[in-house]
Amino acid sequence: MAAPIKCVVWDLDRTLLEGVLLESADARHSPTVRPGMAEVLSTLHERGIVSSVASRNPPELAASAVAAVDWPTPLLAPQFGWGAKSASIRRIADELNIDVDAIAFVDDDPYERAEVASALPDVMTLSPDDVVGALTWPRLRPETVTDEGRRRAESYRDARRRTEAAQDFAGSREEFQSWAGTVLTIRSATTDDVARLAELSVRTNQFNSRASSLSAGSFEERIADDTTTVACIGLSDRFGDDGTIGGVVIDRGAKWTVELIMMSCRAMGRGVIEAMLAWIDRFAQQSNVDDIVVPLRVNDRNVPLRLSLVAAGYRAATPEPGAEALFRRPVPTEPVTLETWVTVESGGT
Figure (cartoon, rainbow, N blue to C red):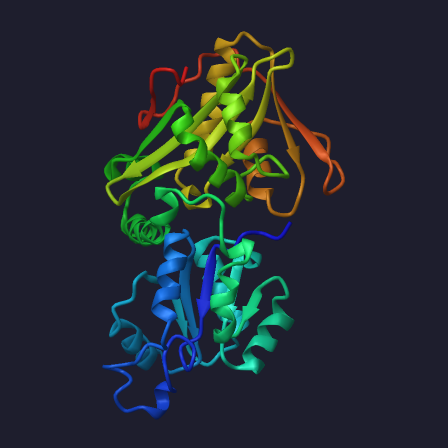
């Protein structure tokens, strides 16, 4: 199944804007938005799909034109200059920490679309006239959109401010976490969390131990099951509240198994995955089991999760790509202490 689109990258000339910037003396200060494009951007924003720009124009001119418009959603990680559009898309994907197959590219120029399609065949390429019709396609129309999804663009802007502050911070990561007021909350999921958990299950891949997503109905069944623990992971700091950014499902039946670990890539580098694994250690201790088992379907995307498991002491035989690996580790014998910025609410064990 093709990945859901997380970001639409737009050209400017004759695509988001009418005319050609270099041919209009007033384009820098009063560009004209192409009819219908503002409504498309707003629709994408409501669906949790962010937008960016890749424009072959002088950077100062293009940046001024973009800044002169009151867009309905931020245009994240914009790329201006004379390089190939495919290179711009790679930079956008890197900055937003998403895979290129989660990107759609819109450009009026067939040559630009062909260049991107050749260099990045996993990118969905569209002409401006295609866009309205494409909004009905499943990849651009997620079944579930939560409040966290709708504020995805704002979360990326928060992340940029956080990264800039971290680069200027002289202390350790732990000291920065304290200065930033980071709070990670682990709590038991309720039926109110089903939509967000299902959304995360579809959208996460770098930190997702399953090869396929879990439906809302599947999460409801697990929450109602007395032998299953479903936990929600929330994250906030002085830069913003990301809401629920991860989840864990643990089958406490005959074989104590961590059925699912998932985390939004927006939480990468913030100590979240390490805190989640430490909480699993502590929960396993409380459950009086000897080993922790995490089934994981190996693919190219979940390398970050596999590396995190290995760093935490898990080991697995190396299977063929696409096969299931059982990552195991003995339950620690010493008491597990969670970071001071991790809060386990009542019911989260």
